[in-house]
Amino acid sequence: MGVAIFLAKGNTWPFGNIYTWLFTYLPGFNLFRDPVKFYFLIALGYSVLIGQIKNIRVMFLVSLIVLVFNWPVIFGKMTGTFSIPRFENEYLESNEVINGDQEWSRVLWIPRRYPMGSSDYLHPLSEAVDLGRLRAFVTGTVGKYETVNYLREASYSGQLLNILGIKYLVFPAMDPMRDDMKIENQLYHATFSGQLTNLPWIKSGGNFGQVQLFETNKKQDLFFIPDNTLYVVGSDDIYNTGLDLRKNAVIFAEEQPNAPNNNYQIVLNRKTNLDLLATSIPKSNFIFPAQKLNNSPNESGWWKRDTADFLWWRDFLQTKYGLDNQDFDYSGGVAISEGSHELTVPVNEGFLMARVMTSSRSGELNLYQNNQKIGTIDTLIRNPIVKTTKLTGYKSNPDRYFNYSQAEFGWYKVGPVSRGEISIVTSGDINVVNALAIVPSDKISELPIDTVKNSIIQSATVEYIRLNATHYKLKVSGLQKPSLLVFSQSFDPLWKLNGKQPVKTYSLINGFNIDKDGEYDLYYEPQKYVKYGLLLSGITTLLILYFWMRK
Image (cartoon, rainbow, N blue to C red; front, top):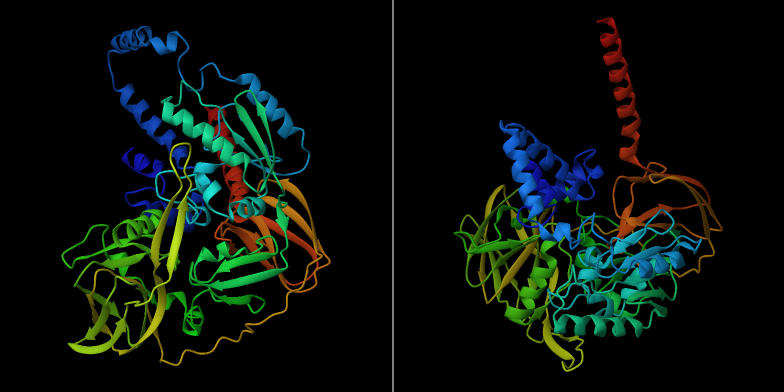
């Protein structure tokens, strides 16, 4: 039961990376997309414990007393499955509008789905709170408490919702049985409603009593083909440049070790050619010092933050050091030293490279092996870029503006090392190491990639048939160049298009490289094991019946 309780919390702290690893690499674990599905194991454990109670009459009497004195149950003041739904007519009317739309689109509930909200394969729903945990939306969040303010604060949020196929947004009424009805909460609810109405990507809105239904200007279909595929070396603050995300699929080179395809158009977002060349380094050559550290400083004085802690980490940099950074970390986390500390890291033989953060509050990294200095990295930015962030106010609270110095991650050549250990010695207020890499020599082979490509307006069309939730048949026509087919379903490497894995696109969804017109088969690979499970279950059932009838 303890294992079930641990898994039911999903990828939240502590040790959330264990659930993420199991979800990615353990076959069949993807069936538990929602960790609350492990509740059944907890319930099973309690049922066994309850079964050990010998005096069942006492158990029944105690349950009866609890029920009698549980006034919320008797007077219909519960908020669970068996409660009386509030605002029933209003939600039914809004559902009729959505269900009357015969084109595929998604529905976004802000902040969460109300129990009266409907969902089916034609209009699947998403929750704003859940989107707020995804990297693309986290970077648009200001602060770490109001986790859905990315809808109004991020200028590109409408574009992200567009590529996700979201056409409708539902803003539920405040429920006195579920919500804290303090005056300030009611004021915020009313203000946020007005802010949604005035967003430039909202086409229209309608009120159904206290329930609001918004419609966006445009949305993409479940499958679409952008004009270009951008391989961005740098952070996702490129979204703030006004980039048209419908026409430009974006793959972030530093989100995870992933060499570019020859058909991608390379964009250096405040990065150097060395950063580009480093994307060709095999994943097996990477060393992530954060993997050996804890979330709190150990005896070396170093500590870490994992990829999943990006919102916390960014807020920490902003509030304590006046820095801002949106760089990816190759999914390896970051190792942090505040002040002068030393960290020992094992390495193999070769030429050492390091990806570290430079900032106006950093200083210097010195690297040693066998008491001999290998190299020095100057991590101090003397004339940093200043970035201004706005937090929208409401009513009597004015808008607030925050200025931060821009911090940057980048690759640096260090020097040759032999198999053994190296020491990283820091000076300055804060120094951060993301990754080390061992390459054969300081001459990293040039990537055979054309960094300048002409943009071609695609006129390709995608027709698809949904056979079931895990299987689609597609037909692509009018393709003018090798492109990326975007499938706006949560990224999962186990989706396969004609047997090929997707690449993570927009940090959110699946993209498949295609180079010609034709028919394609899209399949969720774990589903193929279901038929074997059904076959085994059928055989087991027949054997049980056979032996039972022989008795």
